[in-house]
Image (cartoon, rainbow, N blue to C red; front, side, top):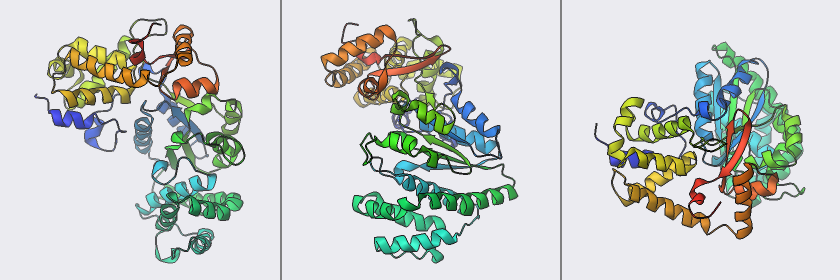
Amino acid sequence: MPLDVKKFYQVCNPSPLDLRNAQERKYYIDFSSVRGGNIIKELMRTIDLSPNMATCQLFTGHIGCGKSTELQQLKVDLEKENFHVVYVESGQVLETGDVDVTDIMLAIAQSVSESLEAIEIKLRTGYFVNLFREIAGILQTPIEIGDVEFSVGIAKITAQTKDSPKLRNQLRACLEPRTKDIIEAINHDMLALAQEKLKGIGKIGLVVIVDGLDKLTNVQTQVGSLLPEYLFVDRGEQLNRLNCHVVYTIPLGLIFSKSLQRLTNIFGAHPKVLPMVPVQLRQGGDCPEGMALLQQMVMARAFPDANSVQRLDLISQVFDSPATLERLCRVSGGHVRNLLMLIRKCIEDKDPPLSHNCIEKAIRASWNQLNGTINEDEWDLLRQVRKTKTIAGLEQYQTLVRNLFVFEYQDDDGSWFDVNPILLGGRTF
């Protein structure tokens, strides 16, 4: 079974897997056994246990740890249970540094209506027809709602405002005073009708997964709060009012903020956090299962049609020795995106089998990039984390976790933190 180097390089592109695609499903590795729990199963059970009620759950994790891929898995699993699932990629329609509640509601309304129209369920609401005509006048955009699908009308509006702060402000001046009415119209005119029609074709219910809101930037809003806190805490009760099952991704920084307790009270549960894949244990020493799963992930990209045993027999086609693959996985710290990026960097230098020297060259390059961004005070903080396995407060989150200097892991005793292994080779800890 020869290695296709070009294909291997291409599939190591660190973007979320589309698990609806049969080929991409072959690349998926389930890390739940080493991540301290099956978070996707927990999200799903909450929905399964309340099929006829509205639920709202929050999901977060570190940049590049695989959140979007896991949410794709949640979508697949829910669809197997006969739910109709709408996946909203908010980054495609929202400007992550300038978002308000009505923007999110319109994005959800657009995606829900578009998804339902695809299965011949068409929604037409008098409230939104009148509202869109008013918006068309404000934006000076001709939108004949009566002549287009509901989702197309929303798409025309969001497309025009996404790249224009001026138009966004004009639109918000119209929409924000009506937030309550807009949510009620979505619930009554859209979601209630949609769920009735979905049940008529044998579906259990409607689930909306809103991905991409974890990328909200920490800009300060006019009310003084940072944008994530403004949306999910100051106005979280409005986001929690949709009459269907909703899963929102949220910025990880909210977990470390003083607003965490308020956030938990508003949504009725603590946000679920997807940690890194452990390459070592809290007490030190390798985590054999985590290392084994990371090696399977790498080899699945190289040989997707081989089984787990066959892949290990094929390591020599990709690396000069099993030890080189182990070194690569260990230094990634279980950060999936970083691991894939290191592989691509090596292949850009030389064809497989990748040598120990090639891997070390890529590691040194990554170390140099990170090292140049860290000052002495931050190195002192990293030494403390290395010793205590903890971080405290939003300031340390912003400095250490958000910049990927520190990774979070989970075990039976809860969360613990450690320094990104890339950094360990260049300083004394």
